[in-house]
Length: 208
Image (cartoon, rainbow, N blue to C red):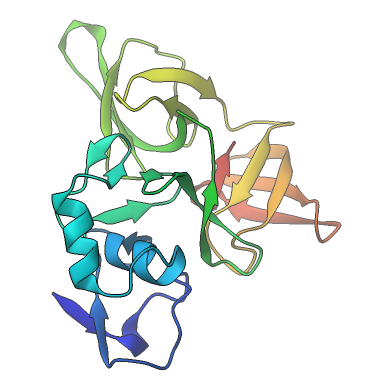
């Protein structure tokens, strides 16, 4: 499935001029990039979608340690992407996606929901579509967990005072800051780059 170039999310650093239609990610249209755009347009490792498909057949592309199956597979914020090197999908100060070379083997994931299961287990629903099980009752919605490539929890950061964070929604998308305080559903953040303080809904911030 494709979309017109004009319909592409502004987060994706794609030239506005070119072919009328471009691939759309299979999931989370506004908050991910398809593998073909990552490889061809951002990393410049291929010239055509056909070349990207060949790389998939050769099993040289992975997302979070799993082999890519479709050139439209979605790479979401903080996902680890393997091509010629290892990269992590991040946001720049203009609120656009960028692939940064990394040696990280764990990725931060925002907890957007959770369910209590039998045996005192919790199912955590994460921002990138991953679901994981845990018995750690301290983990709350809006907190951050760090996962390895086997989706095992390796760390936990509470959304609270003094924590470093990234703004993932709104006009300040892509800016980093430090959480001053949390009041109800509001998070007060001091933005480093702009020397200002702003108030955001919890959904617009991820502790890192």
